[in-house]
Image (tube, rainbow, N blue to C red; front, side, top):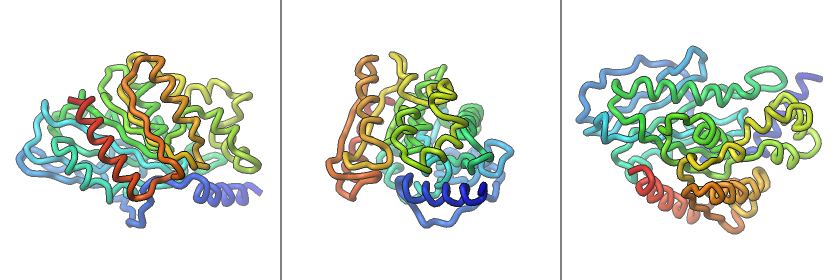
Length: 297
C-alpha cells in the first residue's frame, strides 16, 4: 500500500504540479572542483558545484567577464516541480537571455533535495537546502568575485515559493534586493485546501500533517505571512487559468506587499495557465529584467 501511495504521488505531481520551463536536458550530478577564479576578465561557467554533502546539493555558477567584488551582482534561480520533481537544468534554455539582459550579474542555478513521501526529504528539507545554498553563495563571494549584498532571487512555482520564503523570512541581512515570482504558492494552508481527494492526502504527507494538526508548520512555510516593510521589491506573474496554483495566491501577495508599502509589480496573463505562451513569456522577461535593473541598482 505504501509503495502504491508513493507511485501515485509521483504520477500526480508530474501531472498537477508542472514546473515552469520543463526541459528534456540530461541531468548531471558529478561534483566538480571549483576552478581558479583569479582571471576576472573572462567569463567562467562551472557546473555542479557542491554547497553541501548531499548528492542533490549542487549549483551551476555562471560568472560574467570583467567581474568585480563590488559591481557584479547575483541572480539566483530556483526550479519548480512541486518540491518533488524538476532540476536546475529546467532553466538552462533561459540562462543566455538573462545573461544578455543582466550582463553584470553572476547567475547561480541551484538544485535542492526533492521530497519522496511518505518519509524521505519531507518539508522543511527544501528551504533548509535553499538556506544552505545561500550560505555558500555569500561565504564564497570573494572567491568568485561578486557582490553578496546585491542578490536577485527568481523562481517558478515551488521554486518561487522557496525564493519568496527565503527573501521574506530568512533575509535578515537584507542581501536579497529583488524577488521574481512566477506563480508561486504563498499560503500553504490555502494550497492544501485547494487539493482534493488523494492529492490532499499526499500534500499532508509532505507537510507532516494538516493545517489543523500542524498549523505552525503551514504558517511558517507560507511566504505571505512573512511579508513586512523590509521585504524586498517583488515582481509577480500569474495566469488567470492556472489550475495548479490558484490566482488568489498571487493576488493576496500583491495586497500584502501593498499594505506593507513594499515596491511590487503584478501582471496577470488572461487565459494562461501554469506556464505561459511565447508572447506572454517574452513580455514577462522584458518586465522582470527592467524590474531588476530598477530595484537592484
